[in-house]
Every structure is written in C-alpha cells, then in structure tokens.
Length: 140
Image 1 (cartoon, rainbow, N blue to C red):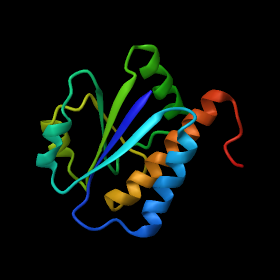
Image 2: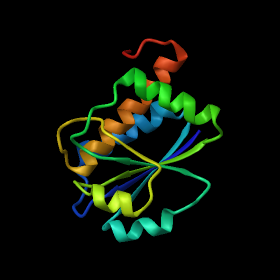
Image 3: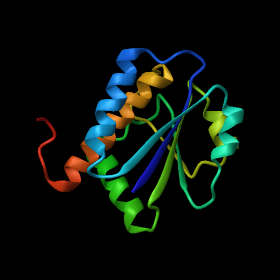
Image 4: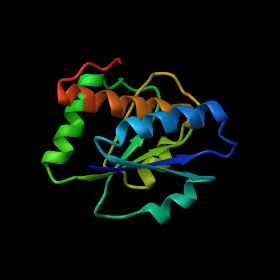
C-alpha cells in the first residue's frame, strides 16, 4: 500500500508534531509506504490529482470511524485494487473536498483539530489499523 497525506497548513508545524509524524512513519514503514506533503492552500491540491489513486477527505464532526472499521476499510481498499490512497486534510473545508471530487470523507474525531494534529492522529490510526489487521497487539 502507498499512502500520501496532503496536509493544508498555513502555519509552521511544531517540532513535537513533526516528531510524532516521524515516529509513526518509522512504525508504518514495515506495513506500507507513506509520504506527507504540506501545501499552503487547498488550491494546491490539484498537483496531487491522480485518477489512479483513491482520495479520502478527512473532516471533523461526523460520525467517527472506529479503529476496527478503519482497519476493515484499509483491507477493503487493498482487496479492491486501491493500493494507492491519498488523504486530504484541511481545517473545516468539506466544501473544498467535495469540489475536489474525493471518493469519500471520513472523521477520526468529532473535534476540529489543527490540520497538523489531525495528521498525527491519522498516522496513529493507520498504524493501529495495520496492527489490527495483523492480529498483533497495538501497544508496545
């Protein structure tokens, strides 16, 4: 599986947020390939438009996807030939996601976090999903 997280962030990402993302990139490296791309505005999403990739918009406030449901979604995507997935994250911009033609939207929290915090949570949830699919314990 190949993942790209496209993060819209107009501020500098804090060192603790960078460290969290790097830690989960390291943990995820045994399960998949993942890349973080930071853009300043949603208009820059166009350069990531690739029809061969499955696009998921991450939005706050909807019914939250559980860890087991997310793991099943990851399994289902890979079984149906979607081995390349893009996650688009921006603060409260569901309209932009709809205009960008994402295949689906999902929520990882009912709270609206800064996009860099949401990215860290998404990385952790991907790691948790792969651990669930492997039947391995999540915690060290």
